[in-house]
Image (cartoon, rainbow, N blue to C red; front, side, top):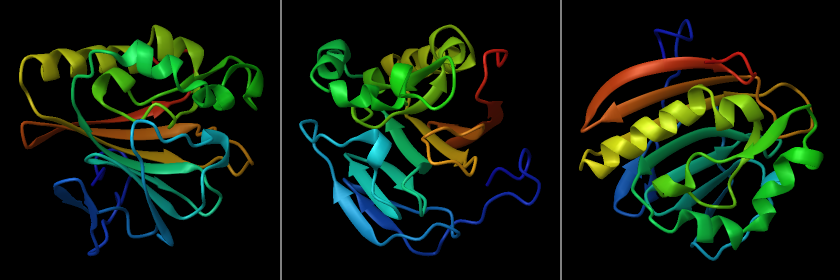
Length: 194
């Protein structure tokens, strides 16, 4: 996976993790010592996620590295009509952005609450990229596809910057639409990423 944008790419483990109705693989360099199942009402502090942990929310898988930073996601996007209300009931997600961020001009960026992602899971995301840039464009495109009845799966690898923060300077995103693996993208977590 990601051979087109990450040299050798990433090899997935032979082991799988059960999420909802699916079995999901994950990068073989990540270790899983604990599995936490989340509900919409679950509250986790995204700035203090457990290390080497697989968080499961429906058919979504979020895996942390040995420092508790989000390192890999495998998410099934589904339309969630009441996302604003859900986000308001989970103020803990803001602990990774704004004044809490370790880098300037960062939002507490979600993978898309309106697309069925857990409201507590967030990471430092450049505010321009999140609100107006490429990430916002991706979210809008995925939402449109989901509303048209397409199945949208997103896999993401987040590269650690060796700090004690939720900041990742480099992201690799792979989208699969209706079971057909499509485009892979390499993103830098900065304002000029359009």
